[in-house]
Length: 287
Image (cartoon, rainbow, N blue to C red):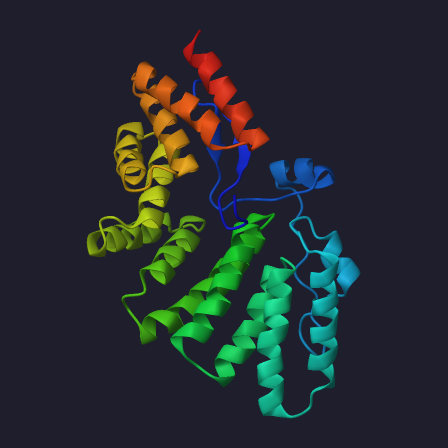
């Protein structure tokens, strides 16, 4: 399962075994209670006078969502040093893109977005702004607090708006914009955008998945089942969609098909959290 996929973070209490939050959230053990109670805001990224985002390798390695290897951390340190030493503006822009890539590879997505944005402003275009938007969006999906999610979601939207100015048909950017709105006080704007994506591309897997999850979160399991059934038909290897289809069917009284889907999921993924959720779902069906 790739980093960009939604992770299981909470187990359901009743028939449903698990739910995936949107956006996904990664917190360390020490911070779980803080996140659950939402009593403390996570500190924003540090800003410095010289480059705006100051992160040494040790700080990156300590981040809760970091999966950086020693080689990636070394590449990050090298790129940061090169960026700070570069004085020529044109060269500095190129180095900013290299530094952004190093931050992204080190799973420091907000900083990657910051430097990709610098590169995009120097050389505007759909591709450069898309990289910045994708990095901010990835950081948004890992946000440990609502406040931080709002900040990063707004940054992602700013970048994607530039993408859509260049190419209004970029449905991936439009879908991500939609999901940033879901986490705000105006979720309907996001749902409207997702429906626009489906209207333009009825088989858009990302939009179908997100609409299905949103239907589940609003207890519209019949609609959720419709979305996930179509998605599984399009992509039978989609583990999350298969699991969610099972959950939706279980919630609408279709236990036998749900049981078959849960057993299928067991053979599709070795993820221990997902396996535990499937076992709980099967146990609930057998009661």
